[in-house]
Structure formats: structure tokens, C-alpha cells
Length: 304
Image 1 (cartoon, one colour):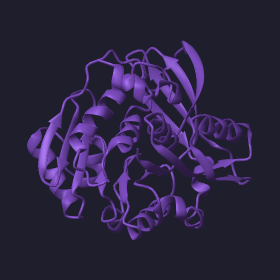
Image 2 (cartoon, one colour):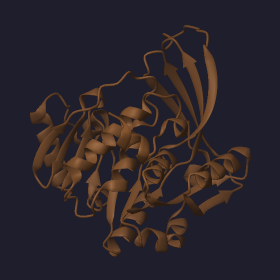
Image 3 (tube, helix red, strand yellow):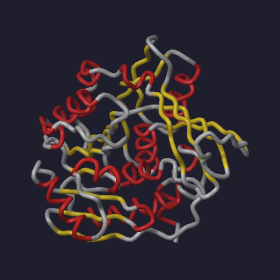
Image 4 (tube, helix red, strand yellow):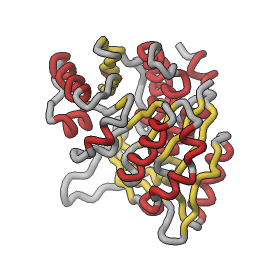
């Protein structure tokens, strides 16, 4: 099984269950309230670990009750937390999720301690990063830290996976050129490339944009329509599994974490790995919350 290091965010999710989003100036009632462990980085790590990957984490929490809670959650999922820094500078990251009855959500993130992560912290985690098969990161931690992690990985000949979320239209060119696999959704891809995803031709044009930076492997996730996958110029749409959606929180993170657990380092099984990741994501959206909804390999392989 793969060894995976995630450099990323750790958040406690506060979930507001509502019928629908309020209109400007409108006051609505909340149907219920719940809390769960989350954060894009942490979600990806849990998804990788539950699919059997030997998983390591590089991140930052505060010296508060939420930080203590999150460290326990990660350790309970058999994730190595030796390279998670505890800071007194701010609070542990938080996300406020407006969850509609339809299953769609809107998320407001307070970065908190996540933005206390530094290049020095990454350097201290060099052994973990350079001994991993895959290094994964996203944009809920500083971009310069992301770049440092990817450069360390490439120095050791390791593969990098970039989840360019939250969407960012100013990604440094040297970060893109240090990326082996990029996994944006269609909205994120449009912001990065300037190409609106409307059909297969626009997807092909988007792939060519990424190829100009040397990224040979691209997955553009399309929600209920599946994923557009490009492997060394060979393109294919992998359909999504049809399920009743309860909550889309952590669906994309589950996809990437599960993918990293089963993907070969030469990417030769990318299409098959995407099918596995899609099935994992389809299980995630059928439950509420981030960590609570992420499935195990056993659950994924036994699902129809």
C-alpha cells in the first residue's frame, strides 16, 4: 500500500442545517446544528488512511480544545501527527458550513492556525515528505509552504498531487511545474485557466493549458457528471456513481485521499484509481459531516 504525506489544513466544522440559503436581508431558522472534524488536508489524510495508505500529516493547530480534539481524531485514524505544530498564536482552524436540504453546501473558512504553517515546518518534515510515494496539498495553508513541500518531494523523485482549492487564480508557475497530478473541480479549473467548462472540447483545452506547465496528469471533477481524466494525453470521462446526496462536504477531499491510496506512482492505473475514488466519494455524500462520512476500503470495495 502507498505511503502518503498530506501538507494541509485542519479545521473543526460547525454545520448549520438549513432548508435553503437565505436571500440577501432574509432571516431564516436553522433546523439543527452539529460539529465534526474536517479541513481539506485532514479530510484527505483520513480518506487515504481509511483506504489503507500509511499516512503522515504536516500541519498546524492551536493550543486550544479544538486543536486537542483534532489531534485525537487524526491519531484515532492511525495518521502520523509528529509533524503537526501546536501554536499559541491563534485558534485552530474552523469552517462554518451552510448545509441545505438538497445536500449542497456553502462553506466559510477561518484559517486560524493553518496559516501559521511555515517553510521551516516543512523542512523539519523532510524525511516524511521524501520517503512518501505521494505528497498532497491544497490552498488552505500558505502557497509558499505548498511549493516548498513539492520541491522537497521532487528532489527525492516523489510524486505530487495538487488540489487547487479553495479556488485561486494566481497560482505560481513554479508550483504548477512542480505538480504531477492536478485535481480541480470545473469552477476551480475555469478560474485557473480562464476556460469555462461547457463540453469535452473545453475540457481538452483546459488539459492543454496544464500541459504547458508540464502537468501530464489531470482530473477535472464534474460533480454528478463524473470526472474528466487525462493521462499522458489520453482523455476519458469516468462517470459518477448515482446516489441520493445528503451532504457534499468532503466529497472532493475523499476522492483525492482515496485515489492516492491506490494510485501507482507511474500513474499507469489512473483511470482505474479514479473509479475507486469516485465510489469512495459517492459514499461520502450519503452521510453528514466530513470525518464521519469518509468510508473505509472495506466499505468502498463492498459497495455496489
